[in-house]
Length: 442
Image (cartoon, rainbow, N blue to C red; front, side, top):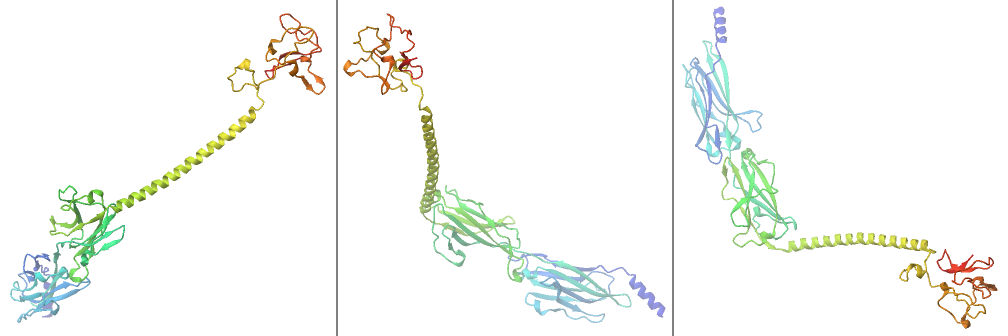
């Protein structure tokens, strides 16, 4: 008998593994805002014909931390009896349970958990697991099978809203999201900052888009200048942990054309979300009221001040250079005049009366015409003549006569007036080769 028992055990061990367990999650993807069905059903059943008795079926949910499994529902039985399924207390507010165990064959045995789709949150978008125990062979050997399924939840982005507006020049902030209805004071050439915030839903790659109305009145057009989108942030709370939020910030410089807009076409900014080809509707808009152009005047004053400072600097540089040039020319002129002292000059007759470098006037020596011996006139000393009473004594010094002008000697011996050089002891009149004036010849 012992021998026969061992043979039966060996035959059970050699049986192929049962693969008839089936775990279905339908639907496995649900829109949290607009579910297409009323319930999400988790069904664990046996489909293998060779199984005689199913003793246990359990359904689990992955914990929020993802490190363990939480039991949702269970049904147990034996070859001769079956118990009603039960549901864990933590899930009764959202789930219902049903099922049965059927033997010989056990293909109709199953456990079903139904979740109210309208109450599903990100908490329920987890993995689920089915475990099934059954008996095979005459000895009723217990075998456990398991299968997992995942529920995916999607959430559409919500309509964004304007959070704050700010004048970056004056630091005035309007908390629009908190119901602040104060008017923002902003002028031409000042910078406007607007912050938009939105729930992205479950798609964390969604980007906030901006638009503003054109000055020509042609409608809203896209605006991407200086837009900064923050990193997506997972929403707080486990029920919303699959949803994300982000902000987008833009800056805009108020222009003259904006201040010239008509009352029917003011400057308006709007932010929106586009996901899955669908753009959010009823997007928020913020109307910018421009109070004046003082900012432009201030900017002009600043620019004028800057220009004045630049002009002063340039004038100082030019003046300094001019001063250096003047000083240099003055030094050179004085040095040149000093070197020019003692330069040779020509007589008026040789160089012309209009020459500015003409030598100064000279005194002409006139021979004494009252001398007893008549001589020829020196034509080079012809004019002007002085009377005897005003005749000068031509002396080189006290007591020394100028022999060239002495009355005891005639200057000229020839009839035609040319000088003679018979007397080597006396000088004669001639042209000074150095000073270009009349002087004594040797």
